[in-house]
Length: 400
Image (cartoon, rainbow, N blue to C red; front, top):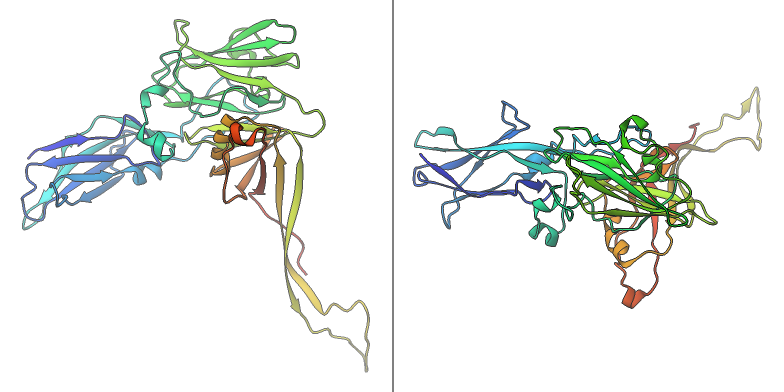
C-alpha cells in the first residue's frame, strides 16, 4: 500500500479559494477503490471530516479540494475601539490543519486510513480574486524583510482623522516583531515611538494603526516614547515592523492626517480580501434616509351606544398593525486616487462592514451597489466615491 502526494496547497493559503491536493495510489486497480481524505484541524485528535474521492478516469489519481470544510471553521476578528493593548491575536481568522490520506477497496470494502500524512499547513480567511490567487506567494507576507507585506491592499497615504479607528493585520508566529510609528510634525520635526508586540503563537495578529486606536494604547506597552502618539500637529506618519534585533522586516505603511473643514467625517471599517479589516474615511458628510414598510387591515367599529348608533370622526376603520423602519446612510468621499479607487472595490464587495460612531462600531448589512467602476486618472481626471449603507438592523413602531 502506498499513496504519493503529487501536489498540495500553499503552506499559508486563503481559505475561500481552491485548496487542492493531487494524490495517487499503487492499489487503484483494486475493486471498489476510493481515496480517503481525513481532515484534522488545529491539532485535534478527532478528524473534522472524511472525504471519499474516486479515482479520476483519465489518470487514476485523486484530486480533492478541502477549502469548503476548512472555511466553515473560520470567522473574523474585528478590533475593539476601546482596546488598550499594543497587538491582538486574530484567533478566529486562521487555523492549522493536517491531511491524512488513506484508501478503501475490495469486494467487501476494507478501509486503510492514515497511509500518508501531509505536513502541517495553515490557512486564513482570505478570498482572492483570480489573478492574485494564481500569482499567490505566501512568502511575501512573512515579516522577515523590508519589502514584506501587511495583510492589506490599502495604498499608502491613506487619509485618517484624529478620531478614526483602524488596525493593520499581519502574519504573526513565528515572526516576532515590534512596531515603530514615525511621525512628521508641522514645521518639519520628526519623532518616533516604539510599541511592544509580545510573543504569541497566533499566525494572524493585528496592531492599532489609526490615530484614535493608537492613542488608546497603554503606556506600559511602549519600549520607546509615550502617549499621545498622534496629535493635531502631526501631518503624516508611517508604521514599520522590527525584529528582535532591530532590523526592519516589513514595508512602510503611510497615513496622512486630514480633518474635515466643513462637513462631519465618517469612517468605515471593512473586511478586506486578505481577511483583515481596513478603514476608509469619508470627509463630505452624510445623508440619512429611512424606508418605512407598513401593513394595514380593515376592522369593524363597534359604534352601538345603548339603543343608538353613534358615528364619530375618531373611529379607526383602518389599523396599521406592523411598521418597520430601515435606515440607509449615504456617505460622500473627498477626492481619491486611482489606487484608492481600485482598492475600494474591496469595500463595495465586503461581507462585513462597520460604521464607526465615536468609539462604537455599528454593523452595516451591505452597501447598496450592484456594480462598481474603477476610475483612471488618464480618463476620469479627478473623482470621488459615494456609497449607500443599509444598516444591519431594523426598528419597529408600536402595534395597535
